[in-house]
Length: 189
Image 1: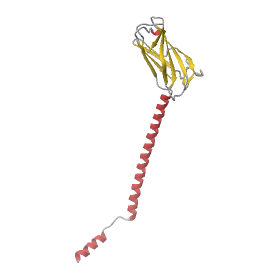
Image 2: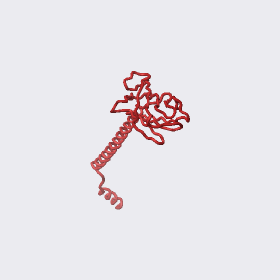
Image 3: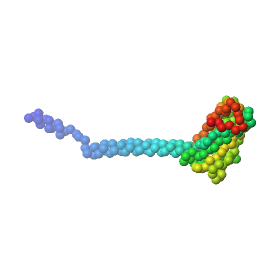
Image 4: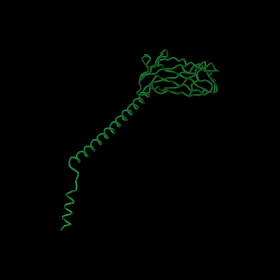
C-alpha cells in the first residue's frame, strides 16, 4: 500500500502545462502560419502580375505586325533590279501600323541584305490600294510598298532578304532569289 501512496504522491508533485501557456503556444503557431500564408499569397500575386505583363507585352508585339499579301515584284533594266514592290496588310486583329515614309518618330524601317550588302533604312514609298490613305494601315486595308534597291546592285540569280520593321510588332521578313534571266518585270515567287 505504501507503494501506491508513493505513486499518487509523486503524480501530485509534478507540474503540468497550464492553460495560459498552451494558449500562448497556440497563438504563436497561428501568427507564424498567418505570416507564412501572407508571404505565399504575396508571392503568388506578384508572379501572376508579372505573367500578365508578359502576356500583354507579347500581345502588343504581335498586334502591330504586318503580313505579306500577294507576290513580290521586281522591276529591272535587264541586268540589275531597280525596285521591289510588294503588298502588305495588317495581321488579323492587329493594331494600325503607321506607313508614313516621311515620319521621323515611330517610323517603319525597311532593311536590305544579301551576300555583299547590308543596307538599313532604305527609301520606300507607299501606294494605297484599299483604304482611306490616312497613313495608318488598319484592318481591311491594303498598301503597296515600293522599295528602291537601285544602289544595291542586285543582279541575276542572287539571293536577298528584305526586313520590314514596323514601330510596334514583329519584323516581316521577305527572302527571295532573283531568276537567272531578268525581264523588265519579274515575279519573285
